[in-house]
Length: 150
Image (cartoon, rainbow, N blue to C red):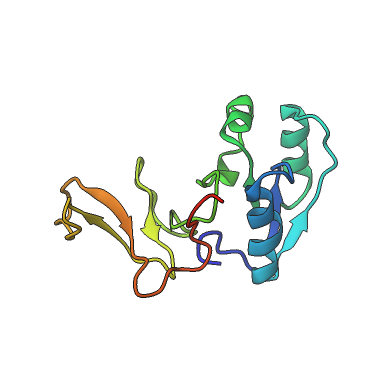
């Protein structure tokens, strides 16, 4: 809800194959939690011209696709549809809608995650100092946070 900031008036189009977790998060869970419409396009093979035409024809407000696909789309002006995301799992940090984007930044932590930059002992470091990105998992592990491979 916080990462995509979708509303009931939004139309979400995610081109991920259903074999990827991204399809579940961006085509099912996030839009449905927010009451948004999910746009579905039968496109067996990726074609940049079809993507560009579809984006110009339909009132899609949020578009999600792979970095490779965006590279193929550079010849078309689709900048108003660009957002950042991740491949596996949900967003822990994001550049949320309406937020000023700082190039190279992960954005801000989204609820319910407590994210800090810490030193080797686990202590938070002052702003501007290097450290390790840490997500609090105690006393309660946030839902949707990957724990292990079986």
